[in-house]
Amino acid sequence: MPMRSSLPCRILIGPLSPTLSTGGVLTSSSLTHDRCLGGYLHHPMLRPFYMHPTLLLPPEQPGPVMAPGTLAIGGAAGWSIHDLLGAAREFEPELLIWWGFHYALPADIAECPIPTLLIVSDWHYHYAAARQFIQAFDYVLCDRLLLQSLRAQGMSHCDYWPAYGFDPQMMYEHNVPTRDIDICFLGNTNPATYQARNRFLRLLAPLGLRYQVLIRNGIPHPDYARVLSRSKIVFNHALRREMNLRAYEATACGALLFQESDNLEVDDFLPGACVRYTEANLIDLMDNYLRDHDTRARIAGLGQQLIQNFTYHRQFESLLDHLPALLGPSPTRKHGSCFTPVQQARQLLTTDLPALRARALELLETDLAAPLNALAVCRSDYEALQQLGSANYVPHTQIEAVHAQLGAQLGDDPAALNNRAWLSFFAQNWQVLGQDCAQLALLLDAGQPMDSEQLVLPLRFTSLHSLRQMLLFRYESNPEALALEWQRLLRWSCHFLSGYAELAKQQLPRAASAFGAATRCAPELPEAWFELARCLESLQRLDEAIVALESGIERGVFFPGAWLNLIRLLRQSGFEQRARRRLIEAAVLFQDPNYAAVQRNIQMYLHS
Image (cartoon, rainbow, N blue to C red; front, top):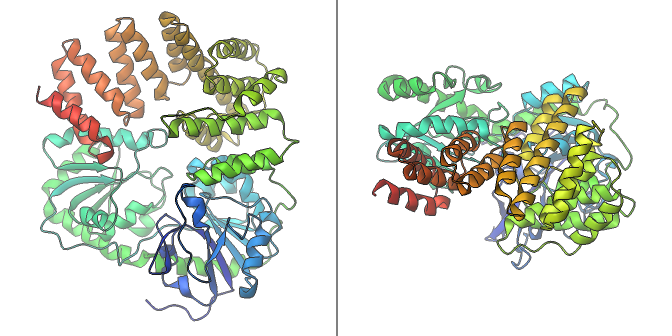
């Protein structure tokens, strides 16, 4: 596809994510990859930079040899924005475009001597960090939902730009024998983040009795495009009501796209070329369009034609069209060292990269002036990630020291006591955990104020982190409502952790009471429901355990162990028909190879 011969300025753009070198050429595979630039990747007025590949690999795995001239940050180029610009000195960039929050943001980004543009995508998991770092850039491009919020906060240096597209050399209608998959979903079903999406997927599960329904977490290329080409309907639900990646890809492969009715962007791309659904009409619409082949094919064909206007190449050109206005007089960015090592560490801990998490610990050790409670925040997050990531988890050597020091400096801040309680949990110090929870309950009952910026809701240990991002986004303009939400989540933590302290003392009735109180504080969080069910089963209160499991699954859906426990208890209690209905649902929901053990159990139950 032809390129413009000249760009508005010399652009330095990244960080992109390299993978293994192939034929001496550095390639990429994440959302922020080379293909997002279309043919402009090799334009003489554009210079991409990458996160150093050693950051993306386990320490024991040797990194790839980078192609000659490849610019990378985080390795030899260091972590400073001046290191990056120094490495790109000969290119003489006039604009820095920083794409996303998946990697380390330099603490001195606000001191960049050239104009800076931030592209914000997938911000739902990084909102707490995004709201701090956004103010360090001259300009911000984002989706419509975030744009509404930023403008409501008085930010004028932001505009709408869709950060996604598709590669027509990868995403096209493949030559397959037939469209033999009636309903398809390929994507993320993380129960901590995609609760609304997963509830819709559960509605689709019973359709497996009369249609071919495929639900998978992800399929690598080129099989991904082949599966979409075999699909009549592709179900989609966008967390931020944006035109997400799946909407481009499914349509490009000739499937009929089903998109949520309140999506803010899809009509700009596919007017009249997709089906908008609600919870009330989803199943009826599926039935209608699967029966009406001609209408389905006509709408899908129109979508396939329209989406060709939004390839990565053309999307990047629309970004270039924004630049002349952005290069004019700039609002005053927030200068100075506005990001402490603790703030940087918290951002790094939200990435998926072990090397960056290790970098977070290095930053903490340099910030000797940081409040000890802030260190505990990050330490708790780090320990939560490590504990979940390894079956042979051993607490970090410093956790006991931080725990003891924090105990001597607590004061009366409920957030600090909450953080110590989580540290007690990770250290498996059950006696101290019980004391922490009892003291936290007294502070909450007394209405003691807290510093919410120091509050830890451990990353990925529960759904708390994702819920925190959502609540912060929803209530940021209403401090009183937000304070009440923080109090509610602290009460959930207090009851939830108290349940574990009681379990350690083998006090099952009191543990069940604590987990039950947690479900009443934050019924949307499924973890307490499952722990409650475990206690109730041990107390031989099977009917109540079944209710608790059903309640947790309703909120979390993709917790396979909970489904197997529910099916087992239903059969044990003589509810064979209910058990079989749940088996049919589970057989559709857990098709991904990652659930192979679950599938074996389901098949065993179905044939017994």
